[in-house]
Image (cartoon, rainbow, N blue to C red):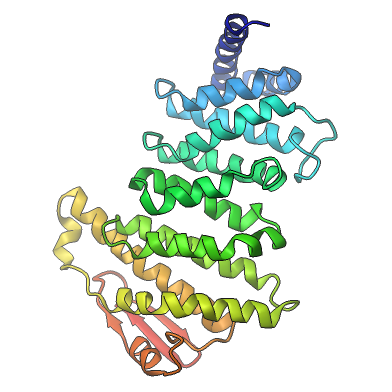
Length: 329
């Protein structure tokens, strides 16, 4: 099939898919069920996943249809991308050339500076499922691409990259894969989290992914206790001074919560930043039973942290950490 004919078949597929996706959003059970069945019947058409990805990438398509396209694509990937994916139905539905076309297209969508957040989130989930099957053997450039974006890209693209990383840490990496990339990953996250030029909400997301790394390590803690604790202590020796600085930084006055949107968003982002730091500390304190200090051998920073009272002008939060109270009021 020549290029023009191939493009023509995809355009026809897109038109059919948009009609069916619209019908899946119908409140009438009959049309909705028929549309869902017709989508299933299209699974064996090689243009099906390409058409869904294209629809999700079009800014001119309504947000609800773009989200529905990615939901349909997620279900398709689970059912027929690889036997290694939970949910595989027994028949491989995507050939290697199509996979090679879809992977970068979905990653571009997940990390696009212009994509809607809901589209980025849905695309990142599909990327993480594909990565679970294809990284690193068939998709070796995935992690290097993400780690290049995190330190230097604009906030919108960094948000997308961090969402993909969050999904990968939670569900995409095997134990061996995670340990192979953990140091580079944590270093990149630290650059994003500690960059005061970035929006606080982006920095908070980077810390959230860092905390996800500890959640992943928790699953292998019993089998590799010494290695995991050593890694955790090494990582925290770099992060703890930064965490202490965040906790001890006072926020602006409460009136900023009622100011124009930009100020309110910044204030809320700063609150989120502090809360993510607290969540990391709680995980470290309770799961790993590590002292909350900077790794310097002195507990001065631990005492300084545990005695911190930070005014966020929001609802009071009390984090009782093994007899040490960290109060955010």
